[in-house]
Length: 335
Image 1 (cartoon, rainbow, N blue to C red):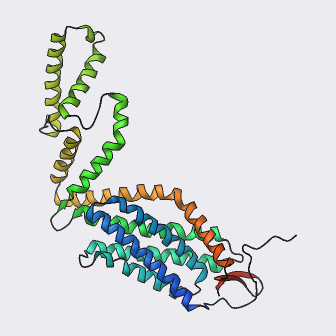
Image 2: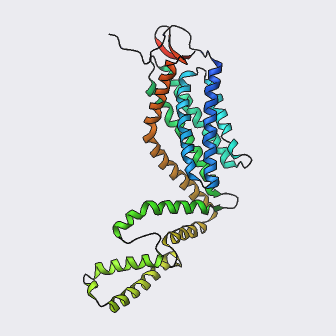
Image 3: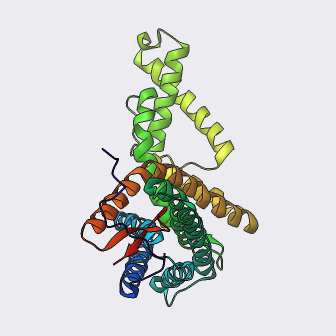
């Protein structure tokens, strides 16, 4: 029994040209719409500090990537793909109007470039294949297409994180980063200090560190009379706090430690020179980009799988079919 082709479809010999302008417009419209959805939720999240809406931005990206992969199979004219990439980049600016900044415009241009590179790579691979290899084609498109969305998100983050005109950082975003750090790192600190909490005052935390240190240096310290222990701890605490303040400046001991961390970060950032502030904001933005880029790699397989399932379903409902060029090369045609 002969092996089945990639899809159950009518296979005839015909030219590889676009045949359904209506379906091409539909595909293009859906891609542009999902890009707008992505930028809208991205902008809304940062503007209003409602970061749960980033989930909807991520979902929009997933749908857009699936459609972008399919469009390379369905659309035979590279010029039409360029138009889709251009309209997607243009619509990405709509969510920010009338408060467009140069950073957002540059981000939209970078988005267009990587979007176009993804299309160029996919279009070239599809046209060089004899048999349709869906996952091979999808793997050639996905990295650059995903990078386009992540880079645009990076420019949006930078736009909200650092105000170039006033040369100031966004304190609200820094507070959110500190809160996230507190939530993630507290269990780690508890390994070394079982009673540790970021909500404790800074003085209480210093006393915990001092007490642990003294106990390690004096094994039988717990047997000392309470008055003696208290005196030793107080003296060590005062000395330790003075050493800390020599390094980082005045420490308000009655504040929760999480607030002390934020104040320390804010003071150091505010003390940077103008050029150093911009460099730090750029570096920090791209550190986040590479972190999210690395995490996103684990989801590529899911995007490709969902795209393949939809590709197969659309063939099954006769949205498109597989054809042959000169009875040798497979390609997909919209019905």
